[in-house]
Image: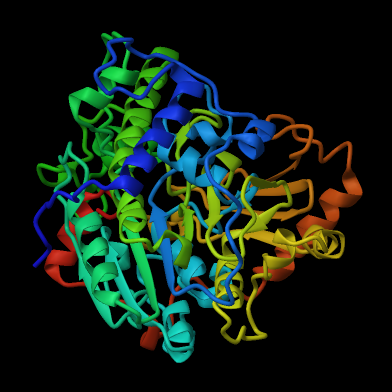
Length: 533
């Protein structure tokens, strides 16, 4: 059973943390009170130079290896909605503080636009095509080692507290190698933060003593439904009179393909035309009308989303204050990232699951702790597959040679030129689009399958329904608005060939031994989240 909420006693170190949070908040909005009545107030994030010069801490003294490794995954958190990445609203004062004490990767990409395959990459160091978790029917094969198993071999105790069905220990096997494990099934209509995740994490850290520990913490709070306590919504949500409510069901309905809606309206099939919601499955039938959001609706959705980020940021401050109070902060390597972002009509969609544009793939990535320089911001493009080799290197553990990821530690040091050349030459893949799952469950061809390949500044995006490739220059066009394939035909042709060769022999159906058999409860849980009919 999960632990109930508990209050962490304050001390000088916790008080210092709170004072520093308020100092950072003052840079943005003139304070940090949650009682501020300035609805929708905006501030600015510290510049890179301010992040370097802000006197929040002295440089971290290097240690041989960390005693504790705290890996935090915040589901559905896009980087550009954090104030530490230049967002003009103060959504993340605690993460801003942590970032000022560590290193921030400004251009980190996930490998997939939804939780299961992306986390499989984060925990194996492999792109989805290599770890083979490509659809909701696939579990992690037994022959693919995980970060937990590798750190256990290096002498670390391992623990995971997770907040998503996709990370369940039995079905999908991503968390199979954690010795301690807790799945917290939060209700879909939860407005308050999931304090039980924080409570379990702090309990395990307290129990660790002198034992080296790898702790994986997963928060689902930012994911739809976009719903937070009033004191957080008051900070961001401006007056609005429209249909958008931030519910997962409404986001899904807006994201369904017109062809799919028409198919279900004309020939309703309960096996293909029922999707879930917090209050049970809903039919897609002759009475269904697709939702189309306008600019005001999307602005409201973003404000609700931002309030959720601020609420989770405040909840995580309990975890970081605990580390300071227990004098563990200088012994702990902290890694904070996300599995994917969220769309707000940048390319015509909301929610997530299908596309491979940067609003979906660009995620935050922060390192803080032993051996990590303070105030460092790194613009080199990196990937979530780089997490495993980097964590192993910082832990003093052996790094397997067969990983897709690259070790990031040279980017923390002075010998960056050679390292950056290697990163510039390698390719990053966005794959395992949710369209593959919809194809296998609903009907082939009704939903598009997106793929992407990136090399340096250039990124190619493929969409299956239109059978269209588009090339973008992310240095000049980070929003991916202008297709330059006609201007750069050689680069476009090269990346198209890379993509065709990569998927030439790809078969989406998993092998029998890697196929997931879901229980009735599992299916209902995924249906409630809107992932399956």
